[in-house]
Length: 72
Image (cartoon, rainbow, N blue to C red; front, side, top):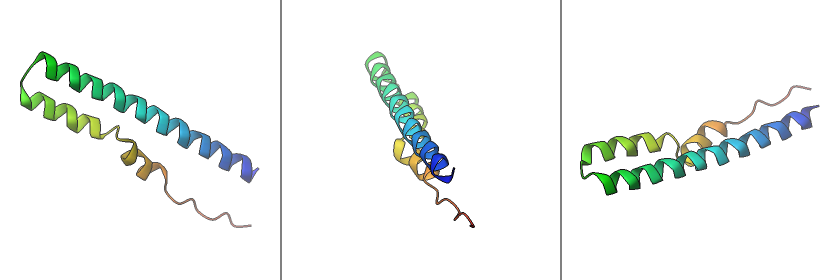
């Protein structure tokens, strides 16, 4: 039972990583489109701050917390 839980956690981590990479790619393409359309720098900075929330390395730091040892 412990092993199944660990496998579910691992699958969840991988799904989160893939999802955050997809979101980061979408945010990046949004930045490129905005830069082509308009030259206003302030808005581009705002999008870059938003992109940071979907940086896979940031989410991995949150997800990869050490798990408490199971007392047997």
